[in-house]
Length: 515
Image (cartoon, rainbow, N blue to C red; front, side, top):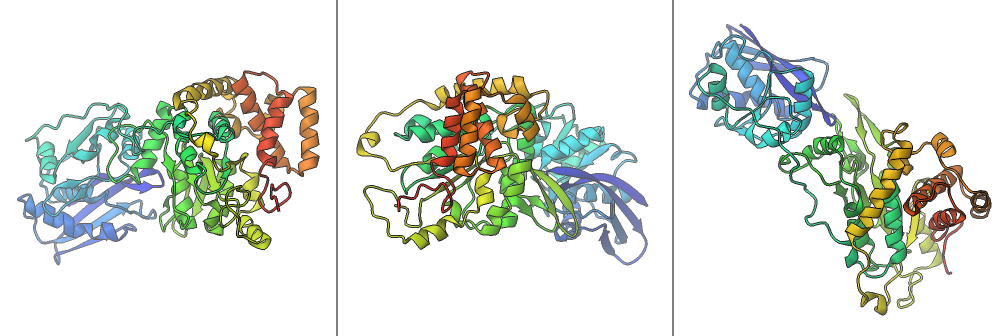
């Protein structure tokens, strides 16, 4: 007999439907799974048989063929145990005819029949809605995440036995109601910006970056507060919208150790180690999985000790910094992941870290300084809008009171973002200044004549590229939004220019090397 069940397989941050076809016929007792399954799916035949047996059902020893259609798409993960088990039961007439019709099922089975949580259940719920399924049968720990979308009956089960009882009419499983905002894997509570002593210029740069979605590079000696500042950036960013929360939850669900409890409401903050490989940073695998830049989507990617990262890993950031997405191509799949993140990088001025420090003598030779700084390429630095010097604290600054709180700065950021939304919403999906195209910059950024003269002078004096000049205009537009200006004033241009000329490109023209 032939039976069908509908399952899913992960595909990037989305899910794809899988038609599980089970054919049973007389012959040697063996089970074949075809349709490009990975090792985890091939091993499911042992888990499924044991789970069914431990539910008190003995199936006849016959030849079983399980086809996962469409056959040309690789299947991976632990999502297909439950639909394979239900399809097998239907093929052996242990379930009523038509009981699986219109039902999407997913979940990993233990040998005793218990259902273990899976990843990506929000994407699966989205798929089930598009398929107009009458219900989604999935492990109980995933119920809150899957129900966050609403409009779809989510049927949580703790074991295969419960699922069977529901399908044969012995037990009623009530759908989980729509859940609201849930837990967030980020640190709680949010660190307060007032904890950072001194560093007024760096705090101002952080506010500008948050207001316009700009990338930032902090350069300073060890202990100057670069990491403290970085970890306080998410707190001054605007909250996620409902659609952004759905997108972030779908992505984070693929990496979280446990399913999110509803929608994630806080922007992600990712800080990978400097030894991270290029595939781990941008995504990879035979069936590509999201990397750190996708896990930081709509949030912050913090790269501490910037020059210590592998060169190929750093250079792989150039495309997503420009386009907000990354396409990973492998022999078996080609997947595009979203990667619209804010890059916040931190580095020392030299390898020993004390170049320019009044209290500690630098031990590096000019050649060593040049080699260290040249580990970050010019094209990558050109894509970072704000280059900020973070000097060592003086004693008076260390003993001073904290400055403005995170909430005070956040209110100004929200006001500036509101102005950008009114100006750019009709033309951009993400209406922030950093996302403006060159054409939008020409049409939407108005300069006072004196401001244009200042920008022209800086272009020649600093040897700016066309990209750098455009990014200066974007930063200046954000500064003007924070000040409530309609047109860019000379002071707005001057402040934007200083964030590229103060530190410049390490080891290149414009560098502030005192030697």
